[in-house]
Amino acid sequence: IRVYAQTLQTGLLQSDPARAADCLRTIVRETEWLDAMIDRVISWRAASKDRGLVDLRCGPIRTVVEETVARFLRMVPPDEVQMRCAFESTGAVRHDPGSLEQALLNLLVNAAKYSAAPKRICLQVRDEGPWVIISVEDSGIGIPAGEVRRIFEPFYRVKAAAAKTSGAGLGLAIVHHAAKAHGGHITVDTKEGVGSRFSIFLPVCAAGKGRGG
Ligand code: ADP
Image 1 (cartoon, rainbow, N blue to C red):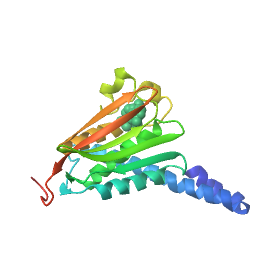
Image 2: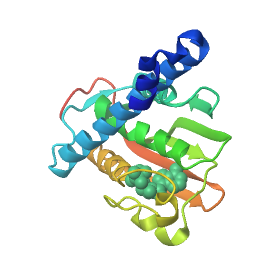
Image 3: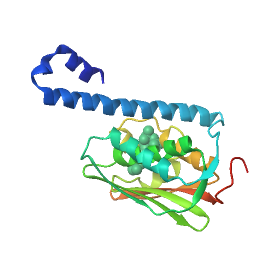
Image 4: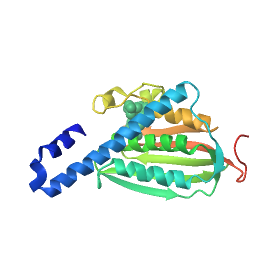
């Protein structure tokens, strides 16, 4: 952010409005990442003190999902990600919109972070028995079989991937915590070199039931 802002500050791009506009777009995109990173740290602090979830309400999750996808798409350069979304759920979920947004955003960010171009991400929300399932599938680097069981631990990062990407190893710990706090769970189906599918299972609730119970 600083380098792009300083470049604009020099005035050297005054004669090149297209590049100046490009700089500004990058600055705005990077502030979205910064925002997501700050949210991540705040969520983790709250989760680790068991103050991770505050306000559960029963209702549809379409708006949260759509807003999260829009937020995610503001974080990535246009054309970098090919995103497919299938919202097939009619179920209502007792959920905390902020916590759900954080969990889904973490999965989308990881799908982009751990994929090489062309980054294909498929988001699906569907009903299955007592569950509403949100799954994020990528065709990225996948996770070595021997490390899968550890990825939800706080601060755990797969060594080979950690060398090439930045991160604190908190994203999936937050998703895991959020899924549990909603009375659900998270699963992963992954193959090294092929891709990964993370699925958050959330229990459906009878619409009309409000907070609490
Ligand atoms: P971070 O991304 O900050 O390292 P996470 O807790 O989000 O932390 O993820 C833990 C580790 O799991 C990552 O370091 C990465 O190795 C692996 N991982 C997570 N999501 C994916 C994915 N979609 N594809 C491949 N590896 C992943």
